[in-house]
Length: 419
Image 1 (tube, rainbow, N blue to C red):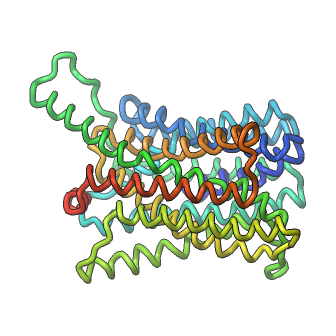
Image 2 (image 1 turned 45 degrees about the vertical axis):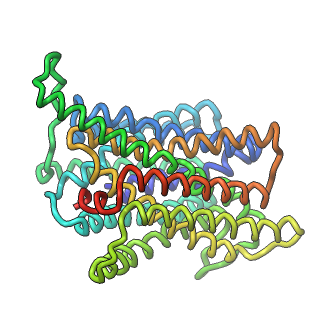
Image 3 (image 1 turned 60 degrees about the horizontal axis):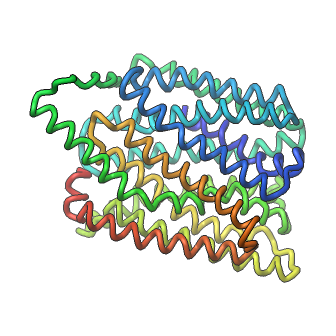
């Protein structure tokens, strides 16, 4: 299900920036702002999905029902091709469906496995993350090709068909799932022990939220692979790979391919090797390293941009280096963040905590939209300077994250609770 759902989402996103910029004539800055605001909605609505699942519907029914809105959004965009109003309605439906099911799917994965060693949960979420990027790779690679050969209507419609397949695949496994029912509504006069437990649960939620507070900056950098990096790639020389033309849009598929490579290297190779040698790498330390790789990738991006600003048209293969570094950072931050959020979430608030993790992405995309608007109106930084400013912002966020992690989750306590 996750592979098909990610094909539908990233396939649509892969062509959205240039569709907004060129077909709807919105210009680069407005197109970038619109796309990041859409992604803000996608990653803000998990709060709604998490509450629906935790309090009323349960994760299974929330996933199944909101998938229908997801399918409807793709269909509406395909039927109203080249209409700005139609696109906005379709994007709103997709945001509701994609955002609403997100915290439920990632928590539902963890529900299927009983408590065990920390390495088991790391492998589970590594496999889950690999399926995400398997679908994303084919979405990024095929949907621009469909657009070039069959037009935007089919390019937006086929992802909707894959979302329908995702919903059917999920429904087909219904009788095999472990389903944790939604929690009861709190009693108006709770017993002292229950009240203490509730307070402790919310205290744990607050701790997780605080330590994750710098994470939006990471997503502000990472999600620009769908906007700023696509625009940069369009100014570089495309190349052929076994007869397949790779340009700035299609290069996004390389990001998913890299994740499929990095996940087994880390989860099956490096992490177990470190654990066997008594140097287990804690989730929060992995995330901190991921922030550093994200900053480095934007420095490399700025170096490529300097060549473009100097009048050169460098080969698109140069972007492979910055993609490789950024995707290492993504696996260290994102797959680990899912593992950390689930492991440290109180059982009665897991849907909410997973939605808080996804809220980080919403805030990151909103940050890009705000900075893009401010930059256009006030600062007017562009190109390599803008990329370097984002790298500096990431380093500041990494320093804050390190301080919060050490204060709220000391290394020994974090490793013990993760088990």
